[in-house]
Length: 335
Figure 1 (tube, rainbow, N blue to C red):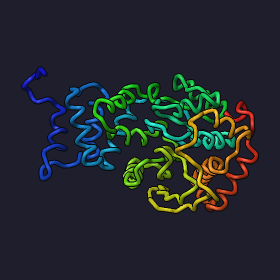
Figure 2 (cartoon, rainbow, N blue to C red):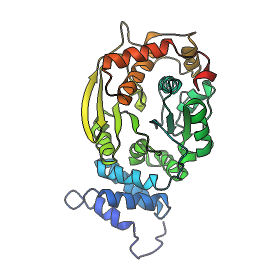
Figure 3 (cartoon, one colour):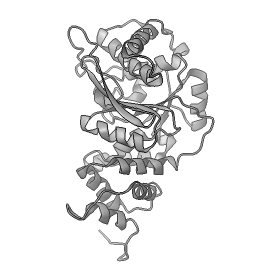
């Protein structure tokens, strides 16, 4: 390895702050984190520095201030698009999919009712990724911000790949095979909410990250958000278990527990065939197992209450059930 220069590198300041050991190291302030991520996204950081920085933060866990700073840096590098009006921000950043993305049907159900839903995320691995599920539903990714705006106007739903939205950030997800583990990139990209939708849904894999995401949302001034442990790290409710939700609403946080919906034998979520065609069959009604149906309606109910906090849990679930019964069975009407 050749050392390019003996002069202190500007990014070394951030490395000294986070990596000087248990007594001298400290978390970055929100402003410092924003400056650090700006340098990373602008390509002003050496590869060795990037790997060291991300691994140190992952080892001791990112703070809400750091995640908020990272988000602000990323947002500042997304082209302005006033025409892209969004009601609900839906991040989809699980990189390894081990169950079908039934939550896509919840998004389409809301879109069919008039909610403008923007989903954004990464390609992921496996046969049941979000893009694969959308393809089975005859929904392709938006090719540009303008295309996403047109899709929202036409159907109420658009999927915008991160590779289109912010390629520099998308490239950082490619570090996982090199570093051997996920990095803070996997956390803060979920909070990107690129077009400042007033409502946001957040599904995380590790319950220990629930409070971290809630606190990040509060720092970013997110008007309304719901965060919960979702199936496979996506925003998909497991109807066989109670669902602990952390809610952000008007600058304050609260918690609510939604009861389990499953009756009888739990659905074999991890053992079912990862065939995205099942999503289409479920929407069109040729296949209707109770577990996946409850996952769709249960996830929808969380969002109906988030979008209108005046609804009770029971009212939101009842409305979600009715929306599912009355859904347009042809996908051309849904999206």
